[in-house]
Image 1 (cartoon, chains in turn orange, red):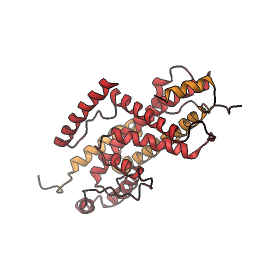
Image 2: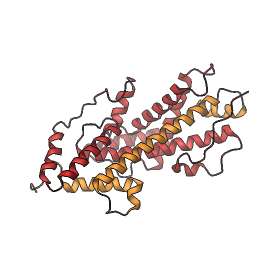
Image 3: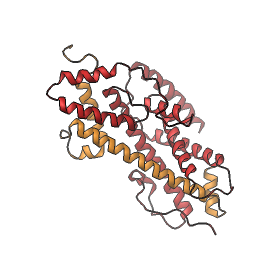
Image 4: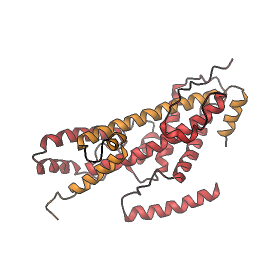
Length: 85
Length: 215
């Protein structure tokens, strides 16, 4: 029991690594045992970066759409009513 | 609306006691419909505030960089609130955004202080993997910089925060894409393919442009 390191055991780390692996799309496709920890970390970083970029992108589109509300078309009215409770 | 908020109150109490007894959040977090709906309504609220905050109907230019930034921050804040204080990244978002500084400046107090020695212990205990673990450490540092508030965490904690953060981000993308599709279908009129809302997980797949400038 105390043959491992005191607070983190290797099993815990492997468990967390496999949990991450199931989340990150690339690693899932390659089969469950292929990814080394470093590769997985790199995939994870890339995945997080791409997700954040998507959110930025979507924020841009949303703000554009919201800006379009400032005109007087019928569609703008609908959007305005959606966004004004 | 009221029924939902009361059940979410009960859920909050249950979740709080659950998180006190066992540290790990449920595996199905961020994936349930209920959370998706809760986040979507928080997102709408946040967007309303952005809209009313940036001045209604004044001469605001269409491509307003601060507004896109405001939308992003509002969405992030709503996401962090949905985490209900369970994770470090969510607390870091909430504490850093409100002061409007870069998140690097704000130190969320991490109770894990001797974690550096644990990393060293991993290194010394596995001599064969020495090279590997140095690379691992640098990758872990990059990951720590990506997830808000997680620059100085131990390796397993960092992995936990990262997996929760990923799931939350995926939900955020889904919700925001769905909203964007709906709004662009309404605003764009005849563009936008049918059945788009269900498919929101794929992200911004239709390259629909913003609306033409008003004449």
